[in-house]
Image (cartoon, rainbow, N blue to C red):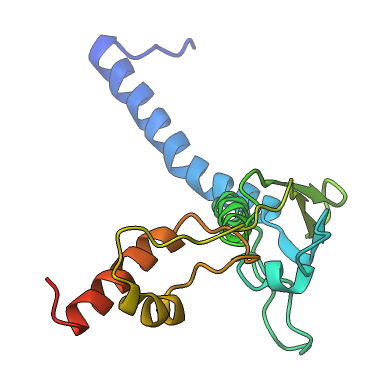
Length: 180
């Protein structure tokens, strides 16, 4: 006896049911595959930091080495954190006078291993310092209070945000002395 194949509408409904079952099964399979691929951070290391202590750089990172306590959870290796950390390193160096600093990262470890070592590489570049601070068009009697309050001092590292802060402080000194 021969089996009859379903006709047009019935065949389409059977195909739709099979497709729905395949879709329902694939997220579970995808989650299992994703859990296999999830890795934890075993250690975080900084390479190339010569003039700034590596410990100071590590404190600004979201990606952290695991705790020394054995019952503590290990942090997950997250690509979004790695990208944010490279930006944080560049800004950290920029505020310390390294205007040309660059940062990158690499992940070390075996392909199927659950733990990964994250290495952040830093190219510091030259350190820019303030050579001199001149106060122009300021009354001579206001020079000492302004110099005491501003952040810019000869020999300090150049930070691009400091001139904006100093402008506000100079304005505050003028207001304290009755000038608008």
